[in-house]
Length: 473
Image (cartoon, rainbow, N blue to C red; front, side):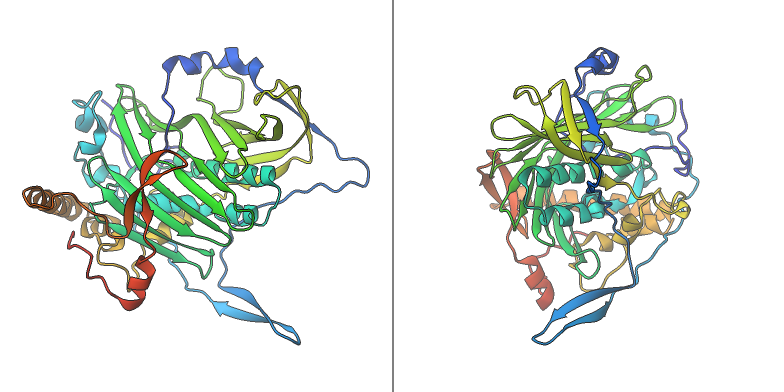
């Protein structure tokens, strides 16, 4: 049986959240047969004197930001200092861990109900992991300034792909949040957004998030099922993501693709993301259909490939995207396409431009759970947050400090406390749990139930009124 050692190997991949299409073992074997059916994209060189519209999206962090003040007589640049954030956490201890010994009796079962020691975790919660998807929020900032609906949809698609980029290097699972656990992240001073997340259900585990950005609002409910299939672990997300832009009023929804954790028993753990994702613009009925190709040893194509086609309400192809979820995504408008097939065999485009490119983390973070710089900052202690915030969770904090034995003891304590609270609640007259900052509603666009933000958290934080929060830690 394999002994999975420390997570410091450069090539070791990683566990993440992903969603809604099932995995067929025959899919990878038939990949070569389907290659001829994929759209062929021809990129025309620009004509003489023509300027291509290439844009590189970056999220560089600086120590200050210039804010323009408009006056009657002149424009002034006012420097606003930003908080200096940490760039390191204690290195991951070199513990030998045997994942097979934990899950060998769980074939076909939902692993969300299986207690797992911190040895298999990373020191952030799932609430923080979902917040980390905003690492490339600058892609949404760019999209918010675009008036062309098809191009805006292409940027939205690139943003959804960017959320999988860290799964290549992190195989450890985040902490399962306790019921009522929250996580706030206010980065308006440097990144231009603030978010609030809450664990709104325990069985099944579900969390809701709400993010306010520069010209956009993103909210989602994330729940999943995870099944151990013998050689791999399948993680299937079930919730919907919503994105609204202020300038166009466009309202998008999508569901995540399936994540597979391979080599559970023998070999090095590695991650694959597979399936199809439909990003729907409910305002215009435009659709972007993305396909995540399963990794295959026998394919001559680039690994971890993603392709996409943006179609209008009539089904006519308008934009195409191509790239990988590990590196970058490019896209461009379609000049010609036969018929209205959303997957035409032949398309021509010019001026393909960069929509998103991964920013590699500094090398010194490899020994720190292969975190990105944003992930390093997520669990940094902050004053004034709610008493239910993930930063205040004791077992997670002890793990970050490399005190794993104490962390495992605390994990048992807080989980038993949660079970006792649940037993008490179930024996009372009001046994249904109600979330503190989100309210369950019926979503007409997706015809599903989801928790919607009540717009009360930041006001309560300003007053430091946490009277509604339970004692969960």
